[in-house]
Length: 427
Image (cartoon, rainbow, N blue to C red; front, top):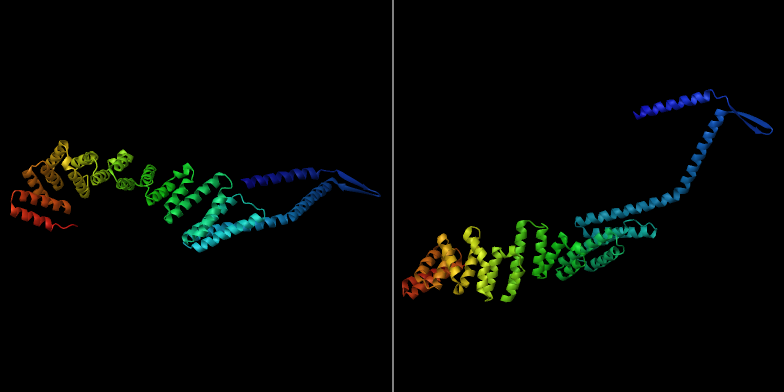
């Protein structure tokens, strides 16, 4: 359609020109003494148009001639800029491929090209980022080659270059350099150095998922359990881990925080640092109670920590694993001398509601021992000894049965019980 319209337009112009030129009888007389030259008006118009076109072409040719040096310089700069970007891309590719020496060589070549452009007064708009990234790639390669002096030198230059201008791109590049420096310190097992690098970041950058992951690793490496726990909570809120992984990490750190307590006061302080959801974790509560028993602290407080776990075990017999049920029984057994009537009632009700559970039979039998109910204790412990899977509880059940038999002067039964206790093998 456009071609047809152009063709019609050309025909219209040709027709108008023919009508004007065909009937144009005008002449132009040029007096050049002693001559007189008569020219057709159409010829004069054509000569003027031709002269204008010739002058235009001549001027364009002169302009192009004078632009040749400028264009040559631009072409040379363009080739150097392309070489710079090619070297930078080659450095990244070699680094990803694990060829660290080649990567560093390519990064240094990119820096050399940038210095050449700078010497030619051809400052690139992104020159600062190119220099910082080149130094960063060289430092990354040096880190992989275990060349720490070269790494530190390039890191210093990258930080210096990134601090010259406060543009958003420069700030983001500097944050990236600081994060890489923190990771390198972590790879060198320098946890304080990694944490110091992370502290240099702006507040917003410190709360990024990658920065929090580095902080978590550094805090754990430096045995800053509370800081690691707080970081793990933030990562869990950011959904940096799956739900199961987050619970596992938080549970492990909470247990480690409790293990670091060396007296009952420190243990209670550590317990106060935990959030409600962490206190309700069965593994954490049982571990805290066991730690309180080991530190000879307030056993009534330890039982208060165990109460939610006990209620969960009673309500859902399969809700706790066998190993955790055994730990719960051991923690309760350690405080049976000071146990109150409420707890004795809970143990009795739980055993009556689930009479086939050997762990409940064992703890109920031990509770009866404390209350001097010898017959009931013997009955429950005998049943428990036949079903207990934990070697330690199994052996202790037979030992208690042996002592009960000795108290009744039943030498034969005591001998059998002692023999059974001796035959229990630890896994």
